[in-house]
Amino acid sequence: MAQKAANEPNEDDTSLNKAAFKGYLDVVRYLIGEGAQVDQPNENGVTALHSATRTGHLDVIKYLVGEGAQIDQPNEKGATPLHYASRNGHLDVVKYLISQGAEVNKGDILGHTPLSYASINGHLDVVKYLISEGAEVNKGDNDRRTPLSYASSNGHLGVVKYLISQGAVVNKGDILVRTPLSYASRNGHLDVVKYLISQGAEVNKGDILGHTPLSYASINGHLDVVKYLISQGAKVNKGDNGRRTPLSYASSNGHLGVVKYLISQGAEVNKGDNNGLTPLHSPSRNGHLDVVIYLIYQGAEVNKGENNGLTPLHFASSNGHLDVDKYLISQGAEVNKGENNGLTPLSYASINGHLDVVKYLISQGAEVNKGDNDRQTPLSYASRNGHLDVVRYFISQGAEVNKGANNGLTPLHYASSNGHFDVVRYLISQGAEVNKGDNDRQTPLSYASRNGHLDVVKYFISQGAEVNKGDNDRRTPLSYASRNGHLDVVKYLISQGAEVHKDANNGVTPLQYASSNGHLDVVRYFISQGAEVNKGDNDRQTPLSYASRNGHPDVVQYVKSEQAERKEASTEGTVKPGFN
Image 1 (cartoon, rainbow, N blue to C red):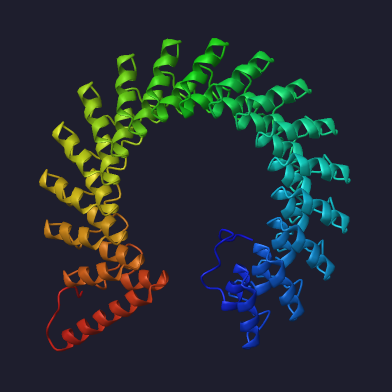
Image 2 (tube, rainbow, N blue to C red):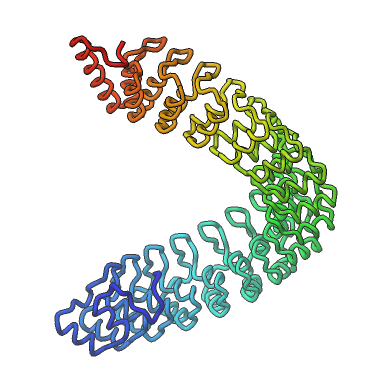
């Protein structure tokens, strides 16, 4: 029932709807007298009766009903006029509609009843009347949320009290097993929380995720609710299904007051969840310095890693929280401590380009050339992600430009693969080897060609990159560009002397790679440059074979036409390039 403000009719409404909405009874009479259909809906299924009930014009409503308007006509979302009147608190209209046979317990497409809407918006008089007319107090919507759940969520204490007096089940959970107390706690309605507990609400009842009312109050920083729940027996260290405690949630969201109170009530500072995350990890990640300071003051372990070995310093560095980094290090955080994959805080700061953090970590003893388990250095990470300022600083601090990882990839390989032209240019200016291959002897030019980075390709060649240098399988930069369909790179490589006919160890030529992957534009260009149309690989598979096998009919058709043309030319005594 999402609608405009109460004083605004919908622009696409019928004239009758607009008049009914505004309460212009004379206009309504005139339009109907001129043949307007009483129940003609607009594109949203809204009739004149819906419009009048929305704004509470009882005289118009009575006239429309007298003219045959259907009392329970639903709009496209299943809402009847009674839903509208209940939602907007028009008691006189509610009474009239019910007297005319409106269904009190009819739900819309979400299962919301008129009582749900009246409860949501705190219309106590409407709530009372609906119940007196048979509205089901505990009827849930499609998510099994009851009127009490909604009234509690929105802090309508009067409605809450009345619903309970009429038999509303205090601990009834919705589809997520979330109770009215959880909703009231989440939204900070202390008066409702107090009343629900006085009526038997279970303080430690968890929902489907294991979140208790205390968890919700802690998440959203409602200190007064937190205090009251604990005074009523809420368990301070009760974790959810992931073993996250209220302290973890309060810490993560930076609610220092709640953090202090929970700890004063016995919350365990170093208690980890299923992922090994302690209350200190999350505020470090989210930059809540005041919470970090207080937790450490209360005994939080600075170097405690979660299940993947990441410490609070890793999290703070990864997210660029320099102030948190400084404090953690001042409290003994290990600067060069690696997580399970060997990445240090400096690696994480490099990945995300946090130059100020990088500078500080190095000033505190972080090892510039320390690699992870794969021997990737911070410089490699910064190069891969294109952080030129970080790259410059690393090199100024002694980072090894040509240091390769276990797979042989250097910082230049990573920058080339991802097309970071400015980083490529700077690395080369600092001595990066242009033709250095990885363990498979693939050069930076091969990586740039494979991924279609033409500007990088051009620069490499201008700096002496070998155009026809093959890898261990004799695949050249042209082979990679062809396989991935980068026509602009293909053209440039050929213009710089790349050999069109050069095949790999398996006998596959660039034309066969392009044909295999259906790159028709590249196939056309190769053939125009004299590529051999009928050349087979070591298994005698031709470009036509590859295109046919992989389902590229456009390439098949083109290659066949070229074969036919060359056959005809051969018969006439002339030989076109590319025929053998």
